[in-house]
Image (tube, rainbow, N blue to C red):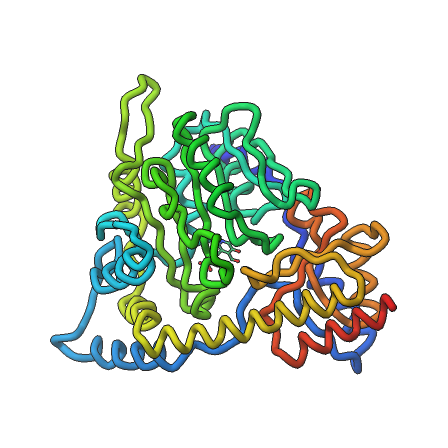
Length: 399
Ligand code: PLP
């Protein structure tokens, strides 16, 4: 008899995106002539930039030759990409990272989910509410206790340090779903807390490329001492449109220590390396060459143009809705605008109204946690035209 991991039975069914899809499909079948504008799902829409395409074409040709053929690559990623990451994402910010502290992967979702493998079951885990659901579900799957840190307008979307001691802390900034950020001072408080409590911070910086304001850290390692307490997740998905290509990386500093039950220190870098070599065979050479090309002058310029395109959309949403009296958060350093529903409407009622009255789709805030009730997420990943039209429709509806 094969016993199951009963923790899976503790998971709440994730109805959010399937419910949205069902509602939209019912609506379109009843209203075939209505043009539905979707600003719900957080997937990019602009094509892969020419610099990355060129790099991939070249890599494809290369692996078709006897000298250039590539079989299994290093599990941790090719050196050329790790070097480019260090030089561009870290050295430019005066952060020293060594090659063996970087692990290239096929996505930050997998990294955020897999990292729990190297931590004990008895750790107390803190996540924000609302939250990117991966942190929650992967800890439920592995049977850990969770503490929730509310992030709402009342605390300016700044998670407060927990009263009880926690061992693992997930921070995602710029945040999905709220689009808000943490400044240097706030992030420093968390690093200090983690040091004092021997906790680990999981810092998800998947949206780092969207940061515009000055005092907002792009990496947690900009904070002194963070290399002793933080693992950082980064992704090419939103930065460079790689949601389909798949490439990301995680930094596990060598200064980072975990503890055995007897209090002995163990290198987390060593454990993660072991886990990676056992369960992963690396990202394809062709995709890693594409990721490397995001750091060329051309690549940087081209992906910046795409990010600016999205951020113009974010501005259109935020400013358009604010003018009409909506209260909006995020959208300045992030492609997500998190708005307060008018007149205390429930998130799903607001969703239904937008869909049924004006054929606009967003994401109900409550789907990311109960503290998201009364909020609604719109994304900047649509086209310029569709985004403007959606805003016009919403403004007209609530005039
Ligand atoms: N982290 C956050 C906060 C995200 O919102 C997402 C995707 O939406 C990811 C990670 C996943 O990134 P990837 O495409 O690299 O798996």
